[in-house]
Length: 294
Length: 324
Image (cartoon, rainbow over all chains, first blue to last red; front, side, top):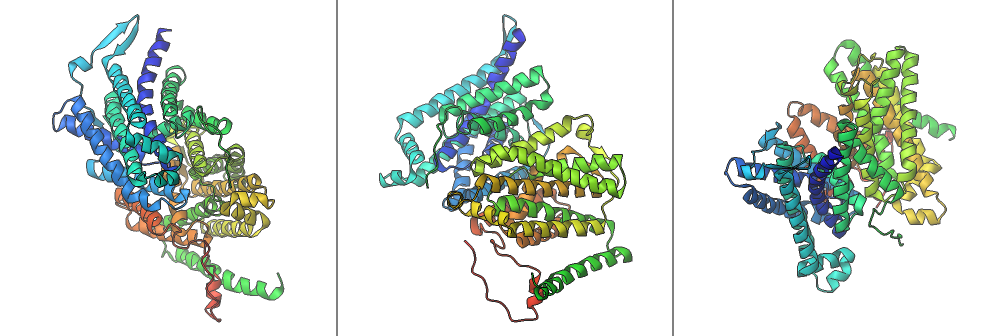
């Protein structure tokens, strides 16, 4: 029982990181129907920016988090403007292949820049590395930090999407881009803004994952990126609360499998979940089935 | 086909191929082609089979698959395990066939439910499938886990490469010219329109996917038998991307484009052999640049066939308008 509770807490920390990444996927998909494969790489860059801030500039955790988020949102907008914008009217396969190309480009450019070796994340200050023992279950300040930061960012996102003008524009464009344009919404700005928000969240997730696993490398974005995508599909892609549920579900499933079965199969289970979801409920948990019209 | 065109086909298409076969064979026997060059030729042949079979799925049927390396892995392990148990030519043929059929079966089983999905969902589902195959191979006892399978008898030689590569391309070309191939192309052009004129779209998609998976498995068997060592990580996500780059560069929907692109990329990667990272950066840039500036690839959906050798001797036919 205690072990289960422990696994659930670990799953919750990992899940909140997945949820942060999944939010970016889902927002971008919701607005331009593109699976942004480069999203996992933005998260990797976030982890490196955070690492550089903490190690070389000696900044604290929260300053580094903020800088990483800003750097990633700039990167996200640049990618959108340079690679995706020219393809807005081409086929989905073309856009998807471009996304894969951008993702590989960032991975290997990063590898050439910082080297392929694994780097150890700097230790957190004492007050953030304490842990509490509650009835046999150990809750570390680190997981509180991860979950707390994630929840705070998600609340901020909800506020932006539902309470601001740009959020309203985002919802309008995702509903119908042409109609939104007719109503005077600047579609290009809105799409860039969406990339900015999603990338900032991915950057934050990168720093948090550096803290969680203690090590980073240039290829770290591939698997979490895919898993976060699975999370987004699980909850219903394009739906923001769906990404949250999906993220927590995938994170928990993964920690439970590695805790009770074998850590070797944790990745396989995530993809098996994906295929099952696609077969039985392709629209996702919260999605509605939409009939294709001619 | 009446007698005269068939003779011409044989002359115009068979002769250049035969010349190619003889040249390489002579090079091998005279020692002009060393092991390194032969390995490049082997990789080239395998890539051609992989690219042509993926092109059938992605280029001609319009079903975006990111899991071709998974089919390759199934074929490679089947051929490897069977030829280790039975190191004869018969064992080799059985191995290739079993490998191909097994991956066709997996393709069929996964294709039946997932091909109902829209393009990008299918991409992710196939990616997931390839990852699952890789992880399972990593953890199975009889495949020797992550350490890989060593000591596979090397039964592939240039004769087999020639027969299997040319055979695969011709079979896939003939498949595309058949009724099933036209169904597949109709599905790519407009699924709803195809359905309304009586094309069984699910059947067309599953059939293309299964045939493509078969040849993917065959290419895996060729790989296992020539390089006599396989490990699950060889067939990772990057391998699928490698194949996709070839198909996209050559042109989605152009078999000859795939062949040309495979040759072009084989040259590029031989030149950049020492600089793995640079090669990957270049590949990635190539993908993005092609998609932004020439999304139809080098060839679009046009074909160059070996008939150009024939048309050197006669009046040039009118240039067909570019499809799409």
